Image (cartoon, rainbow over all chains, first blue to last red; front, side):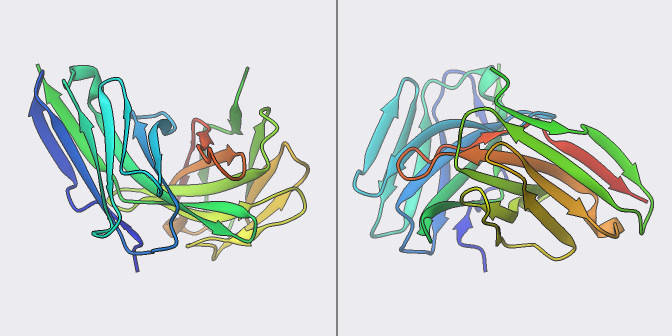
Length: 114
Length: 113
């Protein structure tokens, strides 16, 4: 049973517009949520995170929103740029015997058209 | 600063052959992970190690073994490769607690024929 779900396999937006990537989770023990970006033939790289005690975290063009009651988070990219075209993974972590185990969603492929 | 280094980058195996994927990190991280990425499946955790000397199964551990050789190194072994293990394998490391940002290696593309 998938604990972190990204229900949109792909998303296409125009350069300069907003990109909104969504993620749902089922495990109420998750206490930290992260977004990773992945280009082809490279490893994922960390983008932005949010702890479960907050509902918003902003870093430049990237903002993550967390709705704990709905078990939903979203990543907003404003304005979108062609270089943002990549696969975005939502991830969540829960305490696991002293370690934080990271669980990933299946990813959303974002294409930003010039 | 190398970060997380995986070797090899590419490998082709015949069914039944064995091999070990190597991973090393130079960030003094406590936790290390092995993931596989398959089309449409995202990143699935194979094994992880919370600290030197400990390992735990992830979501898809069957057919794999791991060794946390020391704090820097975490290897993944396929004892008898199967075509279903054709995948891209990523090693990652992170610190514990807050800031569980994980740093990933470049990946190993494995094909089992």
